Image (cartoon, rainbow, N blue to C red):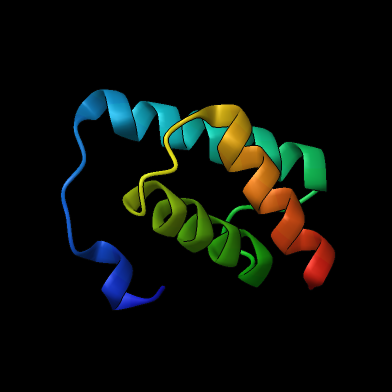
Length: 70
């Protein structure tokens, strides 16, 4: 994981939200935990969240756009 992503702390409710989003997207995309693709997804979720994208639908849109480019 990119160390630059780990520059701020998260509240428990934020972690729960991010985990739920990550787990849902992994299931949707058929990703297994610990895979390179899952790690990349986790890093991208955190990066977007730290950039201020806090709405679940907005996060999914941004992540879907990124998936289309890859």
